[in-house]
Length: 370
Image 1: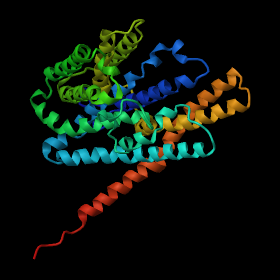
Image 2 (image 1 turned 45 degrees about the vertical axis):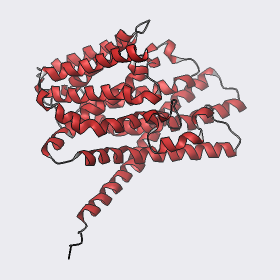
Image 3 (image 1 turned 120 degrees about the vertical axis):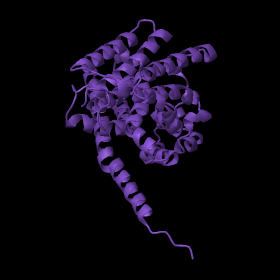
Image 4 (image 1 turned 30 degrees about the horizontal axis):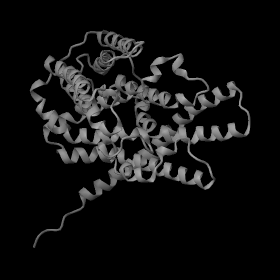
């Protein structure tokens, strides 16, 4: 890993951060299934929005590092870029959605009602299939709830090539970093004044307003890092400081717009410092990054399956508190196992098949005009 903040095509620090964020999302969504609310011991677990916003900001940053040079060199156009991003996430989303439909129909045939039946309304299914549920069509989580993030990111990806080119004059300059922080601060102020709510807690139908500034800030950070210089150990120390800042702001006894803005600004510094840090490295970070998306997209299904079975078991036999905790912990391990299997035997093969299909289509000779 270089010391100037640019990094290589992969960053072990960011890979580890993606895995941590995915695990945090799982803990947040599974907290209400624990025998005792774990947020009483770890209040930060009640702030699941932190990991979601980190994912969105990371998307803008990582795409800037990986695809930015290709866009500038003309190696990929805006439509091809968007198609590639949709092709990367939509098949996995659709497969998990099919799993949810099968689970709901199967349990209904057995006379079992979902724990949250309001999330599995057939009328909401078309918007979820098309990944447009976050475009103002639905005002609530439905089916595979976390996929609203992908829905909002599709619009961000569509605008990324134009944002990236517009930010070219800021390449390697401190102005890019300051502008990224300004975007986040202005978004927070505008949402409070106009909508009377924090932008990080906007409802699903306003997902685009939540995602756009975070994604744009991530892309601007990617422009800024080419001019950042870190000495030995400086990036790691900055990452440690940013991590502590996130914890302190998130642990405020009375959360406010300022404390939540402090969390988001700290996440920005955590991203740019971990990008340059060489502290985290090893094969586990790359493998963790591979399963992070799978864990994000499958954990709601895994949770519905596992904790639905636990609920049925609890209706038949009395479960002691220790047994319930063991089953909850096994639920976490089950989610990770499902994500690993999904990435290895479902998502990766599907992506290879799509890549091969597109390669054959591109290589197919075109008929010549007479």
